[in-house]
Length: 522
Image (cartoon, rainbow, N blue to C red; front, side, top):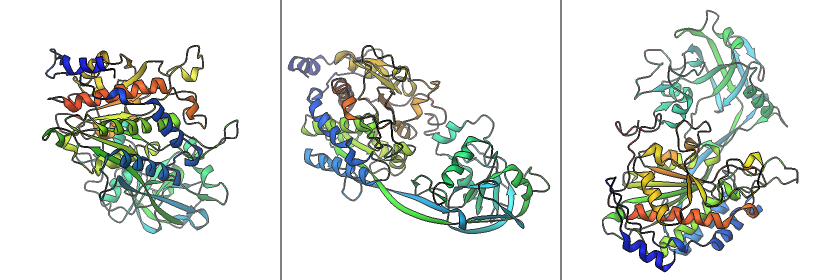
């Protein structure tokens, strides 16, 4: 920020009279965010040395160590576990040996790949009578419990996984009050879950292909170590009928089913990386603004036309990762806003927002004191003049960024953000994706949504998908550091503004399946 602009920002103190909050336009040292530093950090974070930063992987661990070392160097305080910058997130992965796997329906031996496929792997053999439970999803807050009054304990639950009327999968995916059939069945004492499916689907064939590759060993993705711990399989409808000769309706009880999965369980962990810069006000420093980015990507995969197998993730989300590093440096060197600033780098976003979900459910700080979350995911690219590639149609242009969440979440957020932007760098703030009816559902697809589910208002900054998304070609030389720096400075200005406001914004909109202000988290 130039001296004249900084002086103006401190002096103006304008208020937005149409709202119940005041905007002071104090952007702090936003102009200190440096494009050369951004490039230096990203050159390391997106290097081949880190092998695409998969979760979990050695490359991701190296990235975590690098981030933590930079935080210590710049004076950002640790806010992880046990006085460190790290929050350990345990993960499990199970390997299946088909030769040691069997399922018996009564006296009938079912055939793997034809009659059934393992989906949730838990070591050991289980045996019990089958019981049919329609749907299988449960939600105590909504008084939905298909297991109520049914003798489920010690049985193998068969279900079609159908959702209750009026409920959509996105509601289940984003609302922690919902239990999937594996979780709900286990909570009611079941020993295994069988999903009745059509084996003609592409999903069945894809899983079968993975199971039969190489030595016939099936290795699913790493998942959080808190997942269901009972065996889960998919079974064809014809095979399921052999278990229920009298038909499947109500809570029909079928023949005895024995499931024996030849499983070896691996356990490891990845880390969220967390730092905090205390605020300058003796009272308001107890409150916090958080800013996050996922530092993982998708690792090593299929070679592109150049033979490159490393998915470097320079934009996704190396750009957000290094933007946070630079912002944390600048706010640590001062001046500081009144409220404290928490910086968090999530692991496991590419596996399904695992790191942010884990943090908000196991926070290292008091979430009730969190006033705003900002999520930075893919801000490194800008559409160039003359670009006619259809894959870049939705890429934001020069001096432009998508802002997702302000209008959906709060009547206050959008005026604050636009007030800051209008008095500072005047970017084009594109609200194309700031809608619950967006067919791409971008609002639900990044880490801010984990915070919204806990009642914390959030803004997601994003520059759009492009031709190199999830490809080895997402590399540093494609990054527009000039545009990225402008976006990072604007984000910092927003952070600083809310960090100093007397009355910070709140969620005052209903977000179906995520948050309802009337019931504090429905």
